[in-house]
Length: 96
Image 1 (cartoon, rainbow, N blue to C red):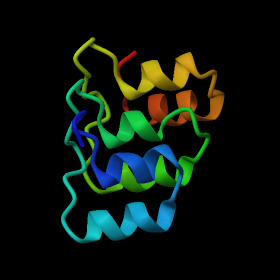
Image 2 (image 1 turned 180 degrees about the vertical axis):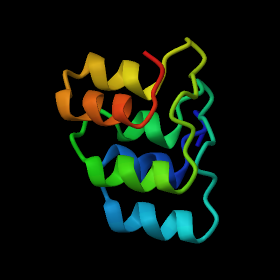
Image 3 (image 1 turned 135 degrees about the horizontal axis):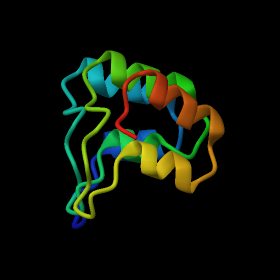
Protein backbone atom coordinates (compact mmCIF):
# COMPACT_ATOMS: atom_id res chain seq x y z
CA UNK A 1 0.00 0.00 0.00
CA UNK A 2 0.98 3.68 0.11
CA UNK A 3 2.67 3.18 3.49
CA UNK A 4 4.73 0.23 2.28
CA UNK A 5 2.79 -2.24 4.40
CA UNK A 6 3.07 -5.76 3.00
CA UNK A 7 0.79 -8.75 3.51
CA UNK A 8 3.40 -10.14 5.93
CA UNK A 9 3.23 -6.95 8.01
CA UNK A 10 -0.58 -7.31 8.18
CA UNK A 11 -0.45 -11.01 9.08
CA UNK A 12 2.04 -10.31 11.88
CA UNK A 13 0.02 -7.37 13.17
CA UNK A 14 -3.11 -9.51 13.35
CA UNK A 15 -1.40 -12.64 14.78
CA UNK A 16 -2.30 -14.86 11.81
CA UNK A 17 0.34 -17.55 12.36
CA UNK A 18 -0.54 -19.79 9.43
CA UNK A 19 -0.52 -16.86 7.01
CA UNK A 20 2.83 -15.64 8.36
CA UNK A 21 4.28 -19.10 7.78
CA UNK A 22 2.78 -19.41 4.32
CA UNK A 23 4.04 -15.99 3.19
CA UNK A 24 7.56 -16.61 4.51
CA UNK A 25 7.66 -20.07 2.91
CA UNK A 26 6.71 -18.45 -0.39
CA UNK A 27 9.39 -15.78 -0.35
CA UNK A 28 8.11 -12.82 1.68
CA UNK A 29 11.00 -10.60 2.78
CA UNK A 30 11.17 -11.15 6.52
CA UNK A 31 13.20 -7.99 7.19
CA UNK A 32 11.43 -5.59 4.82
CA UNK A 33 10.41 -2.39 6.51
CA UNK A 34 7.44 -0.26 5.57
CA UNK A 35 7.97 3.41 4.69
CA UNK A 36 8.75 4.07 8.36
CA UNK A 37 11.11 1.13 8.76
CA UNK A 38 8.70 -1.08 10.71
CA UNK A 39 9.50 -4.73 9.96
CA UNK A 40 7.30 -7.80 10.43
CA UNK A 41 9.03 -8.33 13.79
CA UNK A 42 8.03 -4.82 14.90
CA UNK A 43 4.44 -5.49 13.83
CA UNK A 44 4.39 -8.84 15.67
CA UNK A 45 5.36 -7.37 19.04
CA UNK A 46 2.79 -6.28 21.59
CA UNK A 47 0.50 -9.19 20.72
CA UNK A 48 1.92 -11.71 23.24
CA UNK A 49 2.24 -14.22 20.41
CA UNK A 50 5.61 -15.83 21.03
CA UNK A 51 4.97 -18.35 18.26
CA UNK A 52 5.14 -15.66 15.58
CA UNK A 53 8.16 -13.97 17.17
CA UNK A 54 9.91 -17.33 17.37
CA UNK A 55 9.03 -18.22 13.79
CA UNK A 56 10.29 -14.90 12.45
CA UNK A 57 13.56 -15.15 14.37
CA UNK A 58 14.11 -18.77 13.33
CA UNK A 59 13.70 -17.70 9.71
CA UNK A 60 16.17 -14.83 9.77
CA UNK A 61 14.42 -11.80 11.23
CA UNK A 62 16.96 -9.25 12.46
CA UNK A 63 16.21 -8.96 16.18
CA UNK A 64 17.98 -5.59 16.44
CA UNK A 65 16.75 -3.95 13.24
CA UNK A 66 15.73 -0.36 13.92
CA UNK A 67 12.86 1.52 12.35
CA UNK A 68 13.32 5.08 11.08
CA UNK A 69 13.06 6.41 14.65
CA UNK A 70 15.70 4.01 15.99
CA UNK A 71 13.21 1.67 17.69
CA UNK A 72 13.67 -2.10 17.75
CA UNK A 73 11.19 -4.89 18.45
CA UNK A 74 12.35 -4.78 22.08
CA UNK A 75 11.30 -1.13 22.28
CA UNK A 76 7.88 -2.08 20.92
CA UNK A 77 7.44 -4.99 23.33
CA UNK A 78 8.47 -2.77 26.23
CA UNK A 79 6.11 -0.01 25.15
CA UNK A 80 3.20 -2.47 25.04
CA UNK A 81 4.06 -3.91 28.46
CA UNK A 82 4.55 -7.36 26.97
CA UNK A 83 6.71 -8.92 29.69
CA UNK A 84 6.84 -12.34 28.00
CA UNK A 85 8.00 -10.76 24.76
CA UNK A 86 10.61 -8.59 26.47
CA UNK A 87 12.08 -11.63 28.23
CA UNK A 88 11.93 -13.70 25.06
CA UNK A 89 13.69 -11.06 22.93
CA UNK A 90 16.40 -10.39 25.54
CA UNK A 91 17.05 -14.14 25.96
CA UNK A 92 17.54 -14.37 22.19
CA UNK A 93 20.09 -11.59 22.02
CA UNK A 94 18.20 -8.34 21.63
CA UNK A 95 20.35 -5.34 22.45
CA UNK A 96 19.25 -3.70 25.68
